[in-house]
Length: 289
Ligand code: PAF
Image (tube, rainbow, N blue to C red):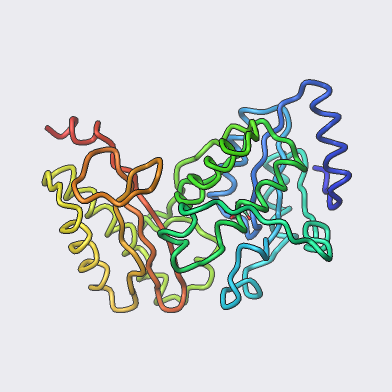
């Protein structure tokens, strides 16, 4: 497993691989790796000749009052997890390497970055788009792997790739969950024992929303969202930031459910803001009826 820290070295390696007609798969991460990330790595290993995992806690996607300083960093532990997966290279640039003094370029992804999570995290998705664009130019992958848990992020990156002609296939992999339904997230580590017990309320609320659509045939999105909020607030440690039902491509809020839709939520458990989502497909309703 090669460890690369310089952009120049990563580009030289990728250029050589491409000249040898090798496919490169990229798994971009901010480290603190968990099973969700390792699932992306395995998929990339299956589908490409060469897999690169990037580890970079990207300052430009954190707001001034967010958890950039507290975000878990455990490079040694991450490398220990990646090594048995037979990752080919790990790209771990420093902040000065990615954003040298005077750096001022930023991608503005537009309105899609200002709704849902973007409403409470202004600038977040522009920071994500900027760093992902840089990673694509540095690693030059044919495919890049992202988890469905960050549903809005996958839509933002799809738009980035289409509109700036990156020619990278975006592969979205299913959310990996614990036995109680809690989606894997590096931020789960912030939860106290009591909060950890409360956190599966996110998945319970999503499954409840899904059931209202699929089994109860409810099409009124306002009603479903209200019922989901009520369920979330039966948990004293939980406070809903948003509960939305949106179209898959543009994330437009719907009033009447026409499948497929994504139910997307952000909930604070104590001080920790967690996100999750579920996609409800037409086929699920057809199977029930
Ligand atoms: O999902 C993440 O970990 C980050 O947003 C990403 C895609 C690595 C960009 O910093």
